[in-house]
Length: 297
Image 1 (tube, rainbow, N blue to C red):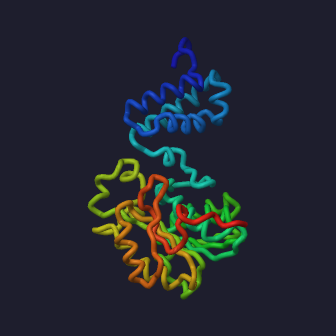
Image 2: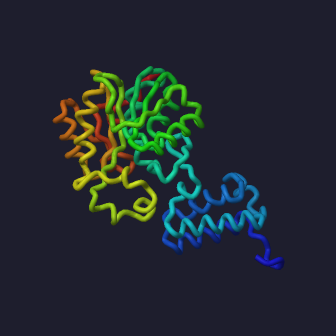
Image 3: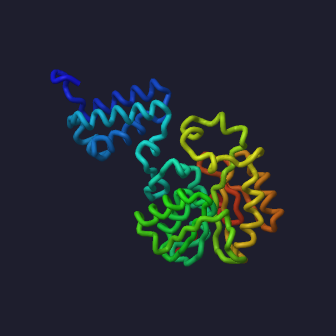
């Protein structure tokens, strides 16, 4: 930018970035461009709408251009910013953890329906990653306590940091272990997990945002994508209290197979719950949000 070139404003920078992202076939170019602009320019969404002609400084413009360049190389916005919103909370994310996705919120729909707002319960999140599921539930249920496990020390560090940032570290603990190893029978009221469920042979065909930026440890579900459920079903049955609720995320085409694995492990009333896109997303013995009324407080 030369002295004779006018400085970009919030609105011109946003529109230019939108056009670049759209030309690069990036999904949601307007949203991505806005999220990156907010950080690069140190503004909020309201600022862009109410003060659109505010000029960017040269440093802000350069930072924004660099972010857009990274997005055009298919790096996810959450990786560029180092954080991602999930449910009603904001989480730090690093290359060591899966970037949380809206699909996973279907687990919360089940858990929060099963346990009313003032309920006190013990929860465990197996393969917790960033701590997304556990921390989102604890943020909604102030009497609940929970544990997150992961085999990745780096993931445990991220989850602990997120818990501290959300002031939930007094009710959330984290342990490096494989699934539920080390926990006794009938320990938890609710068990959740978003395990790896992509068949090994399908990973190469995933979108670059996932294939190149999410840890393969959190994606690879073995040759048929079901290995984690074979391991989890008997373990979840062992550590869940009688009458407790489990909920695990699945791939959209895995409902019948995963349901059968949990039924074979000894669970009754196993069902497949759909997400907001009407795709199979959760296997559970808990309530189906689409067919159960919200419990009264």
